[in-house]
Amino acid sequence: MVAKRIFAYKKGEKMQISNDYKQWLIDLKGRIRQSQIKAAIKVNTELLRLYWDLGQDIVARQMETSWGSGFFEQLSKDLRSEFPDMSGFSVVNLTYCKRFYLFYGQAVPKLQQVVEEIPQQLAAGLQVSENKGDIIRQQATGELYNHPIFQIPWGHHIQLFSKCKSVKEALFYIKKTIENNWSRDVLALQIKSDLYTRQGKAISNFVNTLPAPNSDLAQQTLKDPYIFDFLQLAENYKERDVEIQLTNHITKFLLELGKGFAFVGRQYPLQLNEKEYFVDLLFYHIPMQCYVVIELKNKDFQPEFAGKLNFYLTLVDKTIKRQSENPTIGIMMCRGKDNLEVEYALQDIHKPIGVSEFNLEKILPDNLKSSLPSIEELEEELRKMGS
Image (cartoon, rainbow, N blue to C red; front, side, top):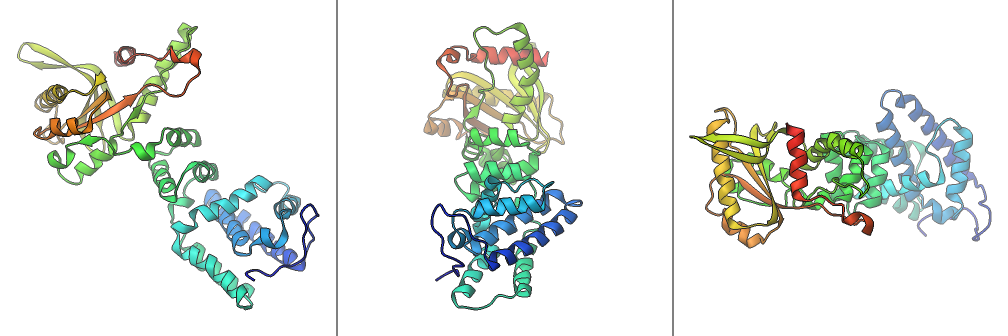
């Protein structure tokens, strides 16, 4: 028997209050009070530690098994009564605390060991003193203080353990959230667009054309496909709707490109002898200290596209790149591509080029599908933003 059954419980009956529950509740209230004091200094970290600690207790003591399905309702009632001005003790949020611990527990081996230790001691009939329990808890939580999971808000975590398929995926989004200071809405958007599977997946020749670690950093800036579904207009749109989208467009476009991109211009002119050439989109990547040329093609990739983009990269390097800056990178965005064809097209090109697909569509009601803009409309909006 893994956990000591405190009382007989039948489904539908009101939970009976046992001495063990009362003692645990007193201990929990004390910890909550301590957390409230510390929260004045580290609000989010202490709140997450409290939720983690609560989730650990629920799992380790097998409280639902011992006390029945009325456990969460009773705990919510008791905590709300004791802390009427403190939110977070609803039945739903208390179940989230359990999910929080179960989801991330495998990412922190020390805490997983603690989870296993308490039931083993109970099964062996050993008494775990309060002092021993405190020592175990302090050792376990001490390793978490600097862990990334305690550096983002609780609302972000609810998004993550509700929607991510693995801890590895969640940790990817946690890292990106910390790096980019994403709000909860932005995080939800990135999860919905499946950034985890798109990041760094484009085909490129960066390994052969860029020195390490720039080649890896450049690869991680690429996505495949890029999602431009934020450009949508209903059939009965008004001029003000267009103005709003134009105002917001470049911010959303940069968000999709990722951290570090600065917009330089659309149809950016480059001079060679008496002839002028125009690149679709020119950006500057601040961390990599290099220009990035983006070419948009409203058709599937063709090998000759790589040659033209290679020419543009040479022009940028020869005309506007400073000696202290790194080589210009090219990104070709097409409607579709044959991966093997792309690999062959890039094999003997010595300028760094990556090739990705882009997608303007998402699942929409039928009455909105016809309003999706063409690539020409996308380019026109960028031209107006850059003028």
